[in-house]
Length: 315
Image 1 (cartoon, rainbow, N blue to C red):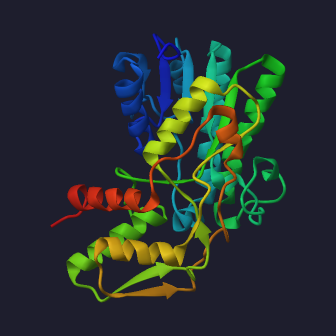
Image 2 (image 1 turned 45 degrees about the vertical axis):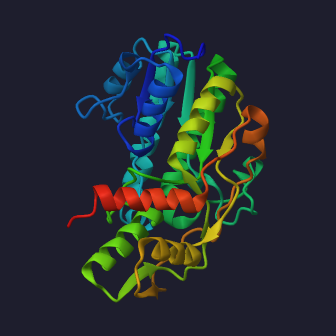
């Protein structure tokens, strides 16, 4: 509680999926006053504009940079240039503005997409530079990875206290269910729930189903970021996740079961699988600031399905 007392925070992306959970947790569990949290709005929130970055950090003690342009494999294939430019320029300008403003701490949120395509499993932070990212998400992953370079070089030259966190794929209530830009869990939930409601006999899923992913419940992710903000002050990147993986075919079967869809799954093998496997080594996060994920995967999925059915599903 003492760490957060009277701190003035900038949370970019604070109105987004992870940001809403993070802001709510800071206010309800850590005593942060709502008026001490600055979340850039639509008018001032375009961080590709230098002046917006400069104004956003004025009088701020701690920055948590969540804002990103992000999507699933299809979105990445359609918008590689935007994903690289927008994410790189937002992050680079904001960190430079924070440095000039002498912000006391900067928490940069990276992405698991920064890891090389064939990283040995589980992914260790030491392997981050041992190859090129998977092609469909490389522009996004590399743009975010540059913020690690910036973070470490600013610490070395200016003594700027910036840390870099690598959360794995997030999911949970409030996720993005837009089929044009959603990730795999909300995309599958929408497909199965909507197909059940429409009486469809089959659902088509991209790829072979043989790729695997690790998934991180959004409330756990918010708690991990808060703990890192309080306790971690080192230059090395830190994985945030659960340390468990599931094949996409097993994920699809699980979501099918939870949603109650009775039809068939058809695999569109003309579509890419993306990175072959993803599972994090979480030893560093446990060692450095004692974080462990709490939400079981099946319970997290059930809560996400229930939220979609109650909030997003049209009658």
